[in-house]
Image (cartoon, rainbow, N blue to C red):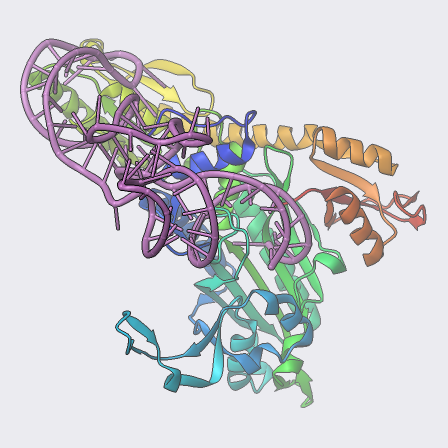
Length: 491
RNA sequence: CGGGAUGUGGCUCAGCCCGGUUAGAGUGCUCGUCUGGGGGGCGAGAGGUCGCGGGUUCAAAUCCCGCCAUCCCGACCA
């Protein structure tokens, strides 16, 4: 690990990149646009997965798995959907290689062309609705509440670790319902689940809302979203939940016999969050000293660093460290005893700090004499000397405080970077000078939204749920508007 | 796909304009030693087809031509 890394002030994009790479979360791979998620980064993702998976199960969902290849013809069945994804699909045309007659390794065997080309899934609505057709005959077969954890591919031109990669990991829920109301309720319920996860696990406050037509998922009637604010004032869409209406049922002819004996089209939802959340996590809490991970998602919540000179001291300090470790583990705290003899304490301090471990315990000969430990908080960088008695309780309490403090700090940041603008000049000035969310009136048209985007690079992140009605005039056209919508520059 | 740049030990880069010792530095790595409460000191050592191909020249990392790759800025996107 290098000592040098950028600060947020110097170069925000570089700062982000340095943290991802130097905290060992991920690195670029030999495949353009694709990343390697390293063990430490993956451990955080696994924590996210575990929490989300439980929440999905608790709301009645089950996991399943669908193929990563989709027949080309499926993708074109829903017009808006193709339109949305066509430009970034990877296509499989052949199924065999052969030795190059010229001796240059292997080449694609031209004899082995697929009759129907396959698309590497950019999302799975089509293959899933094709499958659901076979699963659904009667209202008794509904609802279907399925989630899958999978990889998807969207061939992006410009990529950034976690935020936008050609391949990424995510979960996608796909549900089928007998009524519109039930499907709408499902879409909202999952938005609640995402909100709960973002705020209570990631300690990341989110704005909940509906997307405008412009930003809506291709094939959806309504797209709900949670929007977070990063430390550079830009918005990041952290999760989406779609009410798909009967669009996919119609495209794939999925009907059911209702209680009344009528043939009706099935109602659908889909919802997902991706490894992009890792990027959100980094940009919400981390500081110029590196990554900061909220305790609930930290692979290790506490790291114990032994301080010693002699072999005998090493033994004594480690014995004590092991005792503390098991005492903490008994109350459910995840602990790592860093007893590597190949690195110095100072190095370990810096390393764990950069990797965002919430609490560090240092224990040395002096502590053994006094029955104390030194405890350092990653979020505030405070240090305390604690008596070892009741240490587990004290640390548990500290971890709770850290979790809460991170959320509060992030919320305060968002609040101090949220503005109202009533004129285009004011709007532009706010975006240029401080960034953040800007509540402004908009005439409700796609054209106006696009014009504002061209002029200011800001998009409508969402129309907040439970948005207060307020008469006003569109900042661009001056036409009447009944509510403010949230604009921001976004990732 | 437009505009700009860069390819030199694992990593970050200097050297290139103005061709000429054995191609350097920092960091990382290995060994030894003194060390150890915030990224250690000293000593020794390993590690390079200078992106690839061609050309000019007595001589090319350096000049010329072609190719490839990567990065940054724009349009698209979770």
